[in-house]
Amino acid sequence: MTGTQALLAAVGAGVRTYDLGRRLTIGMPQSPNHPPFWHALPRRHGDNVRADGGSAANDIITMGTHVGTHIDAFAHVSQDGRLVDGSDAAVAGRGGRFAELGAHTIAPMVRRGVLLDVPAALGQPDGCPPGYEITPQDLSAAAQRQGTPIRPGDVVLIRSGWGRLFDHEDRTRYVGHASGVPGVGAAGATWLADAGAHAVGADTIAFECLRPGAGHSVLPAHRVLLVERGVYIIETMALEELAADAVHEFLFVLSPLAIFGATGSPVRPLAVIANG
Image (cartoon, rainbow, N blue to C red):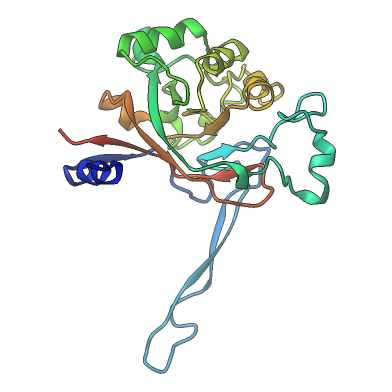
């Protein structure tokens, strides 16, 4: 049996797909640093009716590339004026586009995915406390508890439990400026990079431990991952369903929009497992 036949046979036997992307809606929680999502219908049914009675509607959307579930390109963050390849960040972005490290350079991902359920490992069913820094010890404990060691090339998703606040009626809760937001810091990011992660993701507004009142004033995990180690970051993910079903290992599928020169892209990642 060829590799293609084996893949088709696996699909034919039945798979379950988990949608790890958030629905894009006007007013959804987002970082205040980015343009908000907006959607409108410039043409509605009945505005223009063809001779046969047919009609069509169409849309326009505007949004920042770091709004909703999205992936950060390596052009997104610099440190001391330099990008991951050592290039001058200001020079690289001349003309308003990053030709070398933009979102169009992120290859589609079909990889082993691992969910590290940190609250489960810590015995905190309601999720990590606000502003809690997820440590390398926490990440290692989750991997050991689940029997899912991280392998080079994996996509590693970190559940903090904060994602349950995404649909809260008070949309400021998820952003967590006043309360802080749980997440990894520099040490956790280094642990993930040392383990060989190709990309990492989280259920929070930023892949960071955000201290109460500090907002996005410092982003050490971004520095480690995007600038120093070359690991992609996926943010604002929906991970509660995976955790509820205790799905910790899966086929991870993600394809960013090939927006030339962009610093990031909206995505709709998937986790796929075999039925049964």
